[in-house]
Amino acid sequence: MAKLSAINKNNKRIKLSNRYYSKRKKLKNIIMNKKLSLEERFKAQQKLSKMPRNSSKIRVMNRCQITGRPHGVYRKLKISRIALRQLGLEGKIPGMVKSSW
Image (cartoon, rainbow, N blue to C red; front, side, top):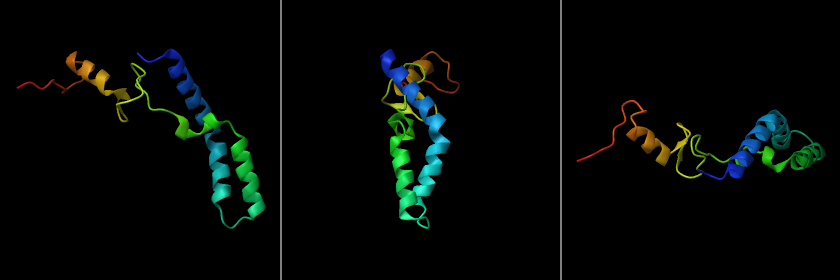
């Protein structure tokens, strides 16, 4: 099980990134628009840099929903390889069987 503080910090980042998503997207569109003046784009860049760092989506870590493990997480399932194996062994995932030969 991962440290509870690390899980809570990541959850806080997720909430912040969801809250600021539309605002950040608008500012990024202004910054990337080459038809606007350099001053307008620069002001948009300054506003973007004044926003909280953790509001960026790139700062969110993919963590296992069961254990909170940060590495070896399958994106589609949102669980780690270890949790997936454990659920497979318990027979909780339909069609999944432990290989044996």
